[in-house]
Image (cartoon, rainbow, N blue to C red):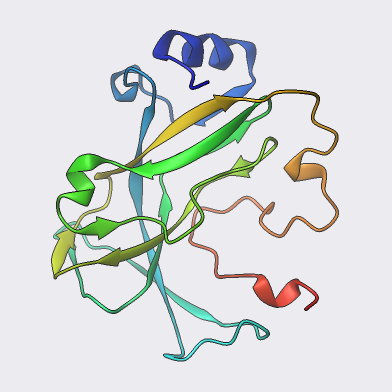
Length: 178
C-alpha cells in the first residue's frame, strides 16, 4: 500500500519519515518531489570492473546548467536528505523528467527501511539535454511494511551507503564477496 499525502505528513510528524529540507509545496497526492543538487560525478575509467573500486570525479553543475550526453553514466545526488524508519521508500523519475529522455536510476530505485541519507542518482539520457541544480528530478513514494523489521539498513554490519553525504557516491560492489 502506498502512503497518501496525508499519511506522509502524519509520518513526518511522528518522525518515521524525515525529509530535509521539506517544503509542503513539493508534496504530491502520494509522493514527494526531490531535487537535483549541484553535484555530479563521472567514473574516471570508461571500462568499469565490478571487483575493483572504480573511482569517480566530482564536479558542480553551474547555474547556467550542464549538458548531459548520451552513452555516459552520470552520478547525481538529491538535494534532500531523507530518513525512513517504518516504510520502504521508492525513488522514481518524474514524468516531466522522463519526457526529456532522462533516466534517474538504472536499478537502484528502492531503499530499505532504515535508509538515512541523500539518494545517489544513476543518470543517463536518450539525447543531449541541459540540466540545472535544484531542478525537480524525481519523486519518493512510500510503501507500508508487512511484519516486523529485524534489521534496519543503517544498523546492518555490511551496509555500504550509511555515511551521510551531499555528493554522489560510486558503486561499492567491490566490497562484496563473489
